[in-house]
Length: 376
Image (cartoon, rainbow, N blue to C red; front, top):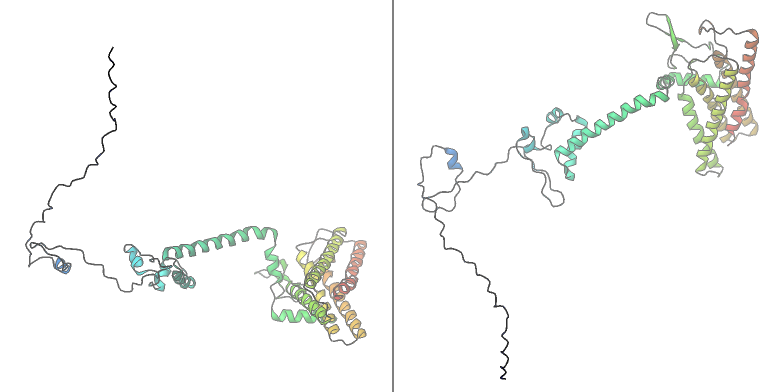
């Protein structure tokens, strides 16, 4: 049997790929139609808008004329190498002119106060455009008004602002007369406070402000005396080489603690003795703060180094003047006049005696309070 030789193996590899070569049709772009030049154009603005350029076959190309900058135009400065803000359109004359070129009446018409017009113009130097600056100013004003309204509505609930304003209604003549009364109270007459008078001349509810009545208590002198006492204590410790920053806090805490203890003790006594109070909280605080005037007078004498005997004599005089002043002033609180402040509570002779004893206890306790304050 004959055997055929095996057929040779033919390569099955794919034929090489040829990428098509793109061909573009030969299309000639026709020239625009020839337009004869009209030397007698009825539109003079067209002649002003002609641009000298390429002209082919009598065809003239027309372009719009460039925008001419208006008078008063000042482009905003660039910031950080970037082009500044370019206003679009007329915007009533504001977009082309900008806030920097506007006058004060224009800004006033936009609702910007005169005091803030310079601030708006100065913001442009930092790359802030006109609209952002004006909006920021209006937003800040709205926030401030909202915060003020919130404080007026909520702060006045917890703090009696009308009473505080009444206590600080003082004048220069009142302050000088009151200081003289605190140092030399022996010959002062009268001690009764003046009630308010209505427009018809009748007696109204309440008392005259300190500006009108020297016998009326105030908070201005106690506040200034407290601050002066703290600074004078720091000076005294500095002269004695004992000053450190904690002295200010320690002295202020001690002074406030003395005032708080005295106020609570008087309130407790008024409660136990059934003493009617009609808005006298601020009055009690003011009366308690008058002792700082005598303490300051004593400390000034101590700084002069006139001797221990002179210092203690000054301290005793300041104590007696403060005690006598409180005896005469607090009598209107502890033993009010029935004709000046009518009340439904009848004070018996026994209750009157206990109130007088309580009044003397308040006066004598000033010796302890003033000694604690004078010792720094």
